[in-house]
Structure formats: structure tokens, C-alpha cells
Length: 468
Image 1 (tube, rainbow, N blue to C red):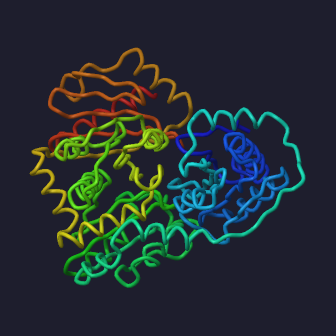
Image 2 (cartoon, one colour):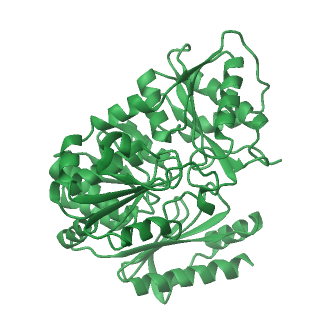
Image 3 (cartoon, rainbow, N blue to C red):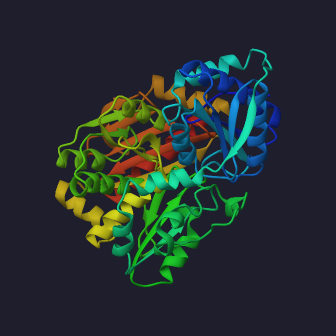
């Protein structure tokens, strides 16, 4: 069986193959020991939470019991909740950290375990490396451990309500239809707890197969939301959360997908212009250039990081960050927690709509006009047959990086996290391997849809021919 390794955010594996009860118990103890060593109070509790995936509650119970047997005081969630709820819970309870059983947006056959630090966000790479090293050591049972139950929702909901003008949102949305699609995931019911009948949720019931698709907010998996919105008229907003509620996307009244590349600039404008907040904007290397353009328009500095919210969280911990966002929809706020939170992002977006009485797509188009920057963003994923394909592609990129892409010269190359090629026509292409699945991700931003399609077609052909 392959060695346990932490990826972009946590450890994930196929249920009953890599992800087993015995391995979960081992990782839980190792993670608890590393968290305890980094915390000032050795008696602080350890939170254990879970999402709605197959056996998640049972895996969480196994993790809690193993940590208790190792002498830790465990607070085990009484029900499934979004990962950000547990990140907030860490701070609220003064805990040493949290273990969350979730595989986020991965396909249904996966489950996983995320580790949150005492600061309320994903632990840095050096701590995950310590956990991996600790797994090689035998676990020691110690007396004094306990398991107690807690409800993660009430305190979390109250904290979210304090971040926005809830009465103003409700009043401003009286003539709007707001649809929420949690994709059968752990964020179901979250916005309803806060906004009541101002929102209508679909796909709220637990489904461990997630309707036969990964619970990832991407257009191919959102047909029910699209159909629902197309059957209604008037002002509409559609919001989508991933399986564990830390990623967000949206849809307009015509059923058109609004990616995080659309939402992040809108959020920057809302926080800076209407809420009067300042601070650094943190974006990952895969983020749209409109993010930087919007930040510049409002006089906000920009920091760019590798992909993975843990890198954004590290910037947040330095202080002075307004917003940090990644291409996949993970968005966090420096004045709240160094953690991505889809429900909080949804509240800010709805607050922007309520205050302006304009749909999200209109706010986005107005931003394009203000900044003078118009582009088209897209991403495709290619499945890799085995590890040797990855090795061949990496070797080719390292030794023979392209100097021309889709008949356009490459003017600059960046290789900090994958390989990003900046082209002479203001387009760019990023080639990067997923940190959680056997996938090659191809990202592109270009002035026109046709140009983007040509670049991605070139990249697909290059990848498939090189991998053979």
C-alpha cells in the first residue's frame, strides 16, 4: 500500500484502498501530537469534524477515539458541517487544532483528512511533513483522554452574521430569487440558517454519490441549478458550494456559469468600495489578471503565491491582507480567519447585490470597463494513466520548455508551481499537476474565446503526445 502523503490540502485516498479506519486512526494520533507540540497549552482540546461523504461520521469517530486513547481531550462534532465551521470552531474553543474528515471536491470514491492549526487555517507544509515522519513511529496510549460532543453550527453561524448586514441583505433581496446549490454537501442549510426564506436551496439532502459527479462547482455538474434558474424569470442569483463548503462559484439568471475568476474581482470591489476596507490582495499564480487589475484600481497591493490556500494563509498570518483567493473558488478574508469560507463569500456577494440591485455579471462587466481589461479564462483537466506519464511530462517541461505556443512566442516562463508561459499576445498558459488527484490541469487566460480554445487545444495535443 502506498505511503501516506499530504497533498495540496490534507491527505486523501480512495475509500477502503488507501483510506481505511486503521490508517485514519494512525494519522489522527500523529496529527494530534504535532498540533499539541506547536500549541502553548497542552490541555487544549482537539476538534474532530466531518462532512457528508460515505462513512465520514464513522471515520471521524475512529479518529476521535484514537486521539483520546493517546491522551487527548477531543471535541467530536455531533453533525456534519462545512470545513470552515470547524476552522472557526478551533479559534472559538481555543483548541490546538482540528481534524476534519473530508475529501472536499474530489470524486465520491475518495475521502480524506484535513488538519487545521490553532490559528484557524490549514497547517503549513513543514507541519504536514512532521506528521508524515511521525507516522513511522509507534503510537503510545496515554491515560486521561476523553471524547465529548459539540454542535459546530450555532457559534459559526453567529460569527458569520457579524460580518455582514443581515437585515440589509434580506431587505435588498426582496425582489430577487436567490438559489443555493450545496451539491449534496456539508454546507447544505448554512445560508438558510442565516437568511431564512430570502434564499432557496436545492440538492440539500445527503447523497454520498453526489448525484454521480464530484461535488466540485464546475459547469458540467450544475445542470439541476441551470435548469431551475432557466425555469424562472426576474432577478436571479445562483450560488454553488463544493462538498465541504470552502469553495464557491455562481450562475447568472440565464444559466451562465460565473467562475471564481468573476467573483473575486467583484468581492474586491465590494469590500474596498462599499465596505471601505483596505489591505493586500493575495492571488495564486493561476488567478485571472483582472484580480490584480481590480486591486490596482482601488490602490491595493497584490501578492502572488503558488497554488494552494495554505500559501495564502501564510500571507494572511503576516497581517494586513484584505482578501486571498484561488482559481478553484477558495476565498478567505484577513479580517475574519486565515481560511477560505464559501458561506462568508456568498454573504458578501449577496450584500453587493442587495446594495447595488445589480446582478453579479453586471458588476463584473462594469469592473472590466473600469479597469479596461477584458479576458476569457478557462481550464481543462486531463487524466493521467500512471505515474510514468507525469514523469515524462515533467522531464519534457524541465528540459525542453516550449518557446512558441499556438504559433505565438513565449515572452516569459515561470516555474514556481507548475509551468506558466506568458505569450506575446497577452495570453498565458499554466501547465500543472493536481495535488490531490492523478490529473494534469491546463489553465489559460486570453483576450478572446477563440484564442483560448486554440491555446488549450495546443496544450492538450502537446500533453497527450508527450505522455505516450
